[in-house]
Image 1 (tube, rainbow, N blue to C red):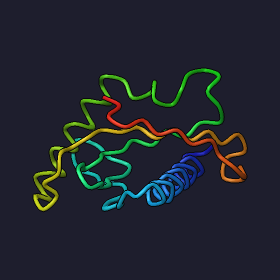
Image 2 (cartoon, one colour; image 1 turned 90 degrees about the vertical axis):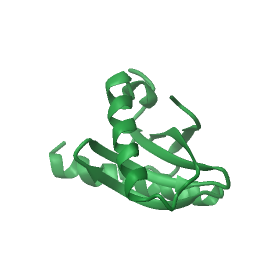
Image 3 (cartoon, rainbow, N blue to C red; image 1 turned 45 degrees about the vertical axis):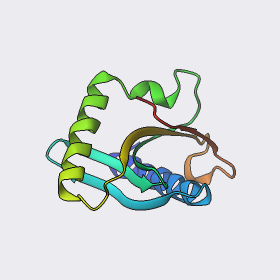
Image 4 (cartoon, one colour; image 1 turned 135 degrees about the horizontal axis):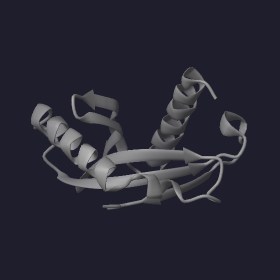
Length: 123
């Protein structure tokens, strides 16, 4: 898979996750937030939380679940990026939370019913 194809597939996974979150009652306030520390795939709010969401898209979980890729190093980058987001957006004064969304799509964007798993307060 080329870099362009991987980015397109990643954006599809993030859009799919955003739609699922909206159906769950979340309000998506940012997608693809970037700063010098890294990127946060999605930022969404609930009544109580400002959720920083890492999306992991896989064909299947035979090697490892998607959330396993959010290791300590990735968590540190996400925390630093979230701190940057909070400094730039003080209007979102909710309790921060880090979530992970897993999407399993064996046929990529052609998958009719991707499997979706959502882990609140993942780390």
